[in-house]
Length: 323
Image (tube, rainbow, N blue to C red):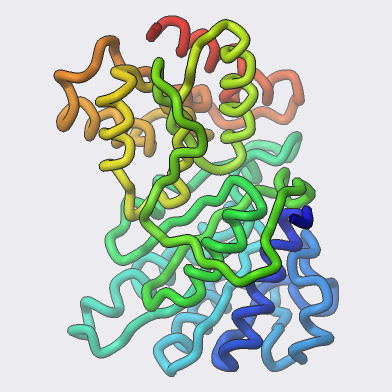
């Protein structure tokens, strides 16, 4: 099977869907003439033209609202935020319009829109450009939140997101755009709302999503050499959250560690820990551990970034303490 970059998988998903459905268009900063800030829309302006691949001013509130209005009029926009840090400028439109329009209109309107772009740390970009908002958006009923961890999943999940009739927050990682992985040339979709067991194991369950899945894989390989058999679950979707798959895994392994790049208070990991203790308490042989960012804005210094974010050392310590 061929190997392509994460950014190429994103481009393929958008392009294939735009060829299939003429109501789909892409809009955002630098998506057209510049071929995308991260080259995830390279060549799309040439193929689809300026009416379907649209450069915007630096006005996230404006073009998010324009996209929502278009989706209320039988179009299916893909809105790219250059980073989800900038989505805070548009969060009123996302939360108060996109997420609520269907219920406020008694179902007369659907909002088939995808807001996509990079989330989280991307190195030494400073505190204002290094934040995770997955749990912020997942807290809002009416939105779906998807966070892929590799090129294969990114393509299948993005195609499903574009076809969904609800607003979807699709969160990528700037540090993953160059990652390569196997991606089928045949069409495929990956369902929203279903976690996947990436590796079966019997000793402990580790749950994660997004780019920190790469750390989880490294930890599983290190511990395999010590005959510790880890079951690895990739959430794929933060809302809806597939608690059932996690609970069934914990019933088998009796131990759980959750790894998430986000601040610890009210994180996705916190909700998973609550749901597991509520629904599978009698199966737990040890306290649940969660690894989050340290509870501070992300520093600029590369050495301090490494300390603040989840890292292999902290994950290994958590796993061994639970075992």
